[in-house]
Image 1 (spheres, rainbow over the protein chains, first blue to last red):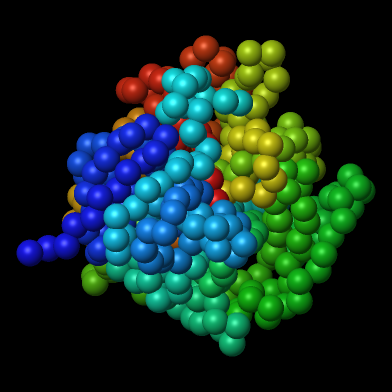
Image 2: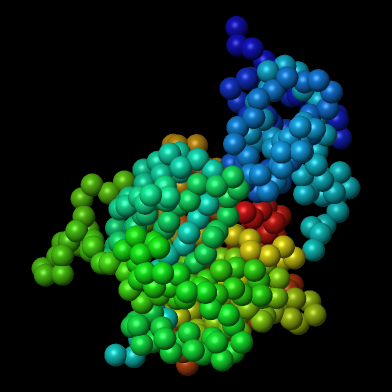
Amino acid sequence: MLKKFIIVIEDTGEEFTCTPERNVLKAMEQLGRKGIPVGCRGGGCGVCRVQVVGNGLYRTGKMSREQVPAEDEEKGICLACKLFPEGDLNLKVLGKWQNIFLNGTQLQK
Amino acid sequence: MSFTGVMRPGHAAIRVMDMDESVTYYTERLGLIKTDEDDQGRVYLKAWDELDCFSIVLREADAPGIDYTGYKTYSRADMDDLVKKLEDYGIDIEWIADGELNNCGERARFQTPSGHSFELYADKKQIGDGLGRVNPNPWPEGLKGMQVYRFDHVLLYGPKIIETTKIFTDVLGFDLTERVLSPEGEMNVSFVSCSNKAHDLAFVEYPEPNKLHHVSFMLMTWEEVLRAADLMSMHDISIDIGPTRHGITRGRTIYFFDPSGNRNEVFCGDYTWYPDREPITWTAEELGRAIFYHDRRLNENFLTVVT
């Protein structure tokens, strides 16, 4: 039986499952879920920045240091497209489009 | 011979986060050909229809983006003349020694107010397309992936694009081919050409300096753009938008991302530019159609995702 973990986006209450081999952003997209803004999907642009809240277990792939400096990484900040769960995770969305998703506002200039 | 001065975008130096994965992507998927590698670990690539020995240089770094874009001049005399014009305009030149990039002559580097680095150079070793210059076949066998024909242009994001664009049009002899005006009537997107392509370079006004929006590669037909899109799904390459049509430049296009999140484009079918044309203007209320002609609305991802 394939291991599956529960991912909760605290900002919106959105919940979906993700296997350890799949990044959280892809799991969200493939299930047609929303909540984390989707950018390049390659760890480069920083649009899908999230923070793992609490003591969730995870590993990460290569991420742009411009978007996730080492001190942020220590606080559980990472890019959802490079975030692989090894346990259930609670996430806070930090990405650039937070306002668009939470308040439905227009693109900010 | 009426085509002198700056001839074309000759190289883009791109930062990637994993060299092996990136070389596989740029060769097997885009279809560039690896021609060299240097002692700093930089990898040199060319498209099949280019004669010069490289047009893309990859450098491994901890953040993606673009280091610089190089434009090739017709001759060394043209280059020296343009460098003098830049200096007279008040722009500092940094000379990069012959051979700093393998098989490339001396380069004159300068910064734009948008925060980007550009270079002019006149000499780069030609290794040809494998077809020769006497009775050639139309294309070589054994090409891979999307089989892009050439590195075509870059679109860059940064501040002060009016000043930046003026360096290209007033000093380096580019033509403004298209522009977008903000609701206040200020140019906030510019497309410029040093040839008779619809664009050889483009800028979008953006608060953060020195950002890369995309590096573009040319295809010849809409069918090839569709085939490129098929390859993206076959290999799970991150697609941004397309295949679709731009209002600006009329290009038929698809946008996608390299493994480090740098946006790439393959496109075909823009128009032929001539210097006796008026630039095309797009107004703020029609910006959706200007960018994606079918969607006709602004796309947050396309407008805000940069490296």
